[in-house]
Image 1 (tube, rainbow, N blue to C red):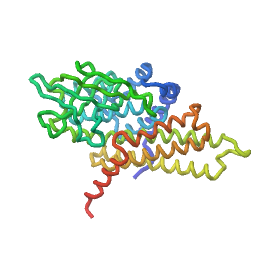
Image 2 (image 1 turned 90 degrees about the horizontal axis):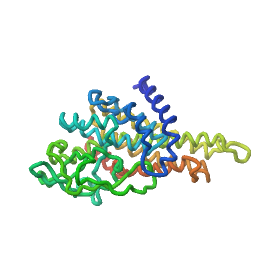
Image 3 (image 1 turned 180 degrees about the vertical axis):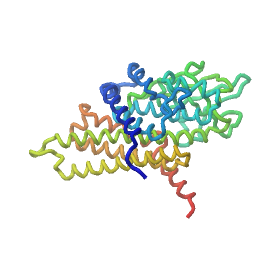
Image 4 (image 1 turned 180 degrees about the horizontal axis):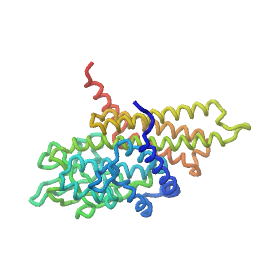
Length: 380
């Protein structure tokens, strides 16, 4: 067992960090003022394959392993968690289900433009009465001679304002007891985007409600088999949790780095505050939690690449990393004092961004359920 990153992973981290520092960081604070990402920035990301990180090369992607994927998400999220969210949702719960469950024709039709960044992916599960209860979906897909007609509303859709290819969970008359997944493109008649949500954090990401009103789609736009919605959703969320864990890790890493630099520079009582034992304790706790988080993320990613079960490990990583992000950003604000509560410093943005990592891709309570179920099924 070698805990030192290989040369490949070191190079990926170095390359992504340079891009993030030079191209994303100068825009991060401005992006936080309102939803949406600059077109120029999105264009610069396309040739770097950020929109097809784990897509096979023959479909236009980078075909990265899962640890490399986690490193990319961590480094982007270190400077802009909202952009990191866009990239991880697009890759993990937007593209991955099509790669895993789609037919060859569906993969060839939908994946290349998504991998090229021409069509941003979205994952539509959450409704007014369906969130943690994935079985409570009320959106309906009625079968017709030409395909299906979708009717329903999805809420809190990440990338909702910019999505091009959308995975929609709906109950169909083919299997009314179970949900199915349908691929919808944003130019489909009957599809529309609601107002962008005014959120506490991740403000650059255009989270929105999506409406499907007599939205007609072809029969071959059903992903997987009818009634496989829950299976597809849970499989996608397992992968998505590695990405969100890496995103939360990036937020925590950023908050820690800025707190360490501030503690060394800030003078009180004629000495740097880094000499105070309380501040040292804060920094030590932050470092331990971040290191443990990274190990959990990379373990889950390694298991996924080996083809082994990783659901519980992804839940552990997501639970620990999101808790770490909240704890570390809270300490970062405390170390910065009054300045930490001011938009003059980025730590207040990290603080706002961190909280939602405990909510989406399964709340912390759901992660504990996943972990506990795994524990209880193990032989004594």
